[in-house]
Structures are given as structure tokens and as C-alpha cells.
Length: 142
Ligand code: DQA
Image (cartoon, rainbow, N blue to C red):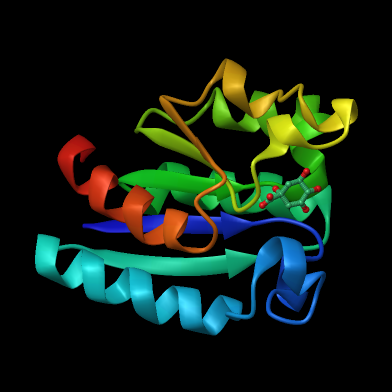
């Protein structure tokens, strides 16, 4: 089995982007971390990233055929995208919403999430370690 770990806009800059908020690890580092956790659980991960809203929609459509579960950090589209929510509602497996930062401690526009209306679990404020924790939990859901 494979789970998809999807990342939205600006997360290609992880490690370089506002490191005080998002840390110094890159998306490649995160992928290695999650692959190790998944291997222990007997499944695999595929890491993906798009700066485009429609890119995330396409990833979710691909997941319908090929993924046992989705971990999604939709970045800023979390707070704006009905299209991503609609796509998630076509996916039958477990969905974990993830944020590196503790969004509820930040600006009020980050407090609302369209993704939360579909997510089976939500993780925020665990830094990039959240990806490993979410991967481990996904192993209990798939
Ligand atoms: C984020 C939080 C969002 O509000 C922000 O737009 C991001 C990253 C996080 O991982 O903490 O791009 O999803």
C-alpha cells in the first residue's frame, strides 16, 4: 500500500522559507523521515508538491486510483479552496490534514479550514515532525 503526502503552495521552499516558523528541514528531508516510518509499518509513501490549486485537485484524483490514504498540507489553499475540499470528498480513504505551524495561534484568516470539513484527523504545530507522526497514525487507518 502507498499513502500520498501532498503539499501545497510555497512548501517547495521548506527549509528556506520563514525557518523561524517552518524550520530548517526540506521537503526531501521530510520524505526520507516519512519513508522510514512507513517502511516500519509495511507501507510506502509518495511525496508530492504543487504551487497550483488545480495541481492539488489532480493529485487527489490520482489518489482515488492509487493511494490508500492522504496526508495533506494544502498551505494557504487550506483557508480558501472549495475545489480542494470537493476533490477530497471524492476520495474514499482516510485523510489527515496537516500544518507545520500552530495555525490557531496565528492570524485569524488561518483559523478557518475547508480541509477540516473532510479530514479524519488534524495536526498542527508539531513542526515537520508532524509528518512523521501523521504517517505513523495513517498506518492504523489503512
Ligand atoms: C501551513 C499554514 C498555512 O496557513 C500557510 O499558508 C502555509 C503552511 C503550515 O504548514 O503551517 O503555507 O499550512
